[in-house]
Each structure stands twice: as structure tokens, then as C-alpha cells.
Image (tube, rainbow, N blue to C red; front, top):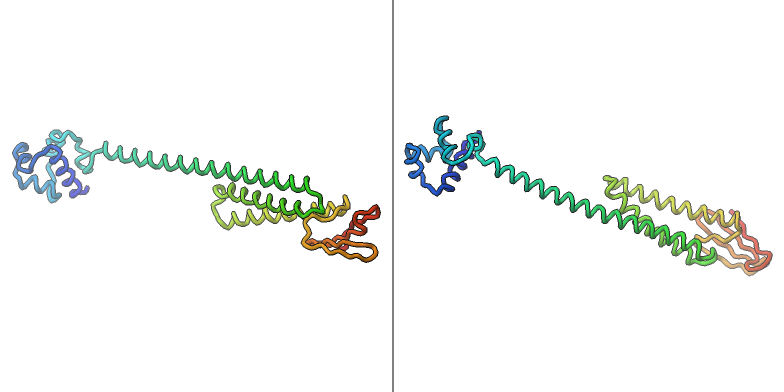
Amino acid sequence: MDQAKIGSFLKELRKEKQLTQENLAERLNVSNRTVSRWETGSNMPDIGMLVELADFYDVSIPEIINGERKSEKMNQETRQTAVAMAEYSRNEVKSGKKKVIGILLAVFGVFVIISALMMFPNESSWGSVYAVLGSIFLVVGISVLIKPLVAKRSLRILTVVGCILLLFGAFTVSDYMAVKEFHQVPRFRYETIYDSGEPKQIVHKTLFFTVVQENPGTENEKVYIVK
């Protein structure tokens, strides 16, 4: 039991009634000194006087003992709950917006990748440029989507790195299949060397293999991997 808190509450109740300590003392038939001791917390009313004070101030005995009105406490808790719910709602809306943005970025990235691979021939460098650009959109979208799902930053980074490696592997495999199965030049090459000797050759270098294109643009054109 906090006597100082009880005394402060009794003082607050008296002021709400617009009474002085002398006025209250007269009404309760006690001395001014007694009222003063109640309100400073140095002394507490006895049981009989506690009942009389509760009746006079129109509060319950537990409220006097607790040093606060229950209704005010409940209102404060209600306000705090309302604020917390509003904050939660704002976070949910923000999270929903981020989710939509992540999905749009990822879908747009996939669309750009597929369009680049279908629209541009393997000989054109624009296909690889737009495919890489689409990959960036896709990875950013995935990173936005996983942020609220994965708490640890290190795991998010690993997931993003994994997506990048998967895309890199997919592009490498697609280049390999294009050469082996369809006799096309690799799209994701980093260097192209032209040799005017006989037979005329164009050498396309990728990170994992080198492709030779013999007699380009003729009926005798051959495309094969040398290593």
C-alpha cells in the first residue's frame, strides 16, 4: 500500500469538491492536522473514517486504497490498447503495400527476362542486357517479399544470394543448351573474337566454356564448344 499515493488521491478528491482542509475537517468532525496527515501520507484514516470518506467523495474503498479511480485506469488502458491497435493496423497496411510492391517487382522482372530471351536473337547483346535488368527487378522484388518473413538479416542476404546464383546457373545452362542442342551462339558471353582465317571463325567466351562459330552466316556454319 502506497500511503503517499493514497494521500495524493485524497487531496485530489478534496480539491475536486473545492474544499479546503479546514472545510473538510469541519464536515468530518476531525482536526485540520488529521486531514493534513491523511493527504501527506504520514497517517491513514481508520476503517470507520475510510467508509465515511468513500461515501463523501463518491468513490469505492478499494479506489482509495489503490490511490486512483478504477474508471480512469481502465480508460487509460483502453486508450493505450486503441493506440497499439492503430499502430498495428498501420504496420499491417504498410506490410501489405510492401508485399504488393515486392510481387509487382518480381512479376515484372520475370516478364522482362522472358521477353528478352524470346524477342532478341542470341547474336544480339540486348537480350542479355535486358535479361540481367529483369533479374535485378526479380531479386529486388524477392528481397522485399522475404524481409517481413525472415527476421535475421544474414538469412535474408543468403536468400538473395541464392536467388542470384540460381539465375546465373539458369542463364549458363540455357546458353549451354542453346549451343549443344540448337547450335546457337551463347547469349551471355563476355568476349567475342573474330578470326578472318580459314575457316572464318568467331570465338565467343563465357565464364565456363568457349564456343567457336565457324563460317558464320553461311550454309556450312558450325557452332560448337571447345572447352
